[in-house]
Amino acid sequence: MAPLQIGLLLGSSRPNRISPQVGNWIKTFLESIRATSPEFSISTVDIETFGLPAFNKPVHPALISDLSTFISPSVRAWNHEVAKYDAYIVVSPEYHAGIPGTLKNALDFLYHAWAGKSAMIVTYGIMGGASASEGLRVILEKGFRMKVSSFVPRLEFPGRDPTKNNSSPALMEAMQGKLSVDTVKSWESETEEILQGFKEILEFATAK
Ligand SMILES: Cc1cc2nc3c(=O)[nH]c(=O)nc-3n(C[C@H](O)[C@H](O)[C@H](O)COP(=O)(O)O)c2cc1C
Image (tube, rainbow, N blue to C red):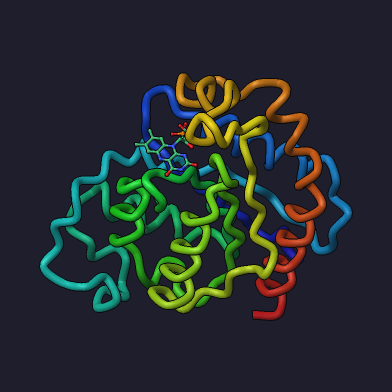
């Protein structure tokens, strides 16, 4: 059997975002474990590189089953890229208690490229991006009829101070684009959850 192709989507677009570092940490961890069967290959998909416009289509993408008929080159390329994968890891920060607008905008251009497939959601934020995680689950399950893993790791910035609006040095560094060593160390406790969620999406992709 050919290796399962996993697309790891980066959910933020700020020039100084940390999502590439978070995605790379998850990818490196999963590739180092390989305690799973079947074989897999993880590719990072950076939404930002597609140069998508703000959603401007006359119809719902569910009405476009032939992806090559998307007229806009960027939207067509985005759909073709997403369609390549058997399952997904969506890595997203939390912005204002939800997912970033740029991520939602990019997802609105999709339907057949990934409808019905499986995904693990990994969020990060002050409280692990819990609100973004819940919101994204609704979007993927209800909007795209996807199978979201029961394990959805939520990576918290350590050291939050409730007397200072839950701020922390780790959060301030993240806002400036730096994923601190202490933050990554504190996330090691979440690796088992990441592995379990990953196994779930592999299993679902294999059964399909
Ligand atoms: C516009 C904006 C809104 C944010 N809102 C939240 C929030 O609601 N909850 C939270 O935990 N962190 C929030 N943050 C902090 C982010 O978790 C932190 O900046 C993180 O680094 C963002 O991910 P990124 O670097 O990949 O863009 C917000 C950051 C920005 C820029």
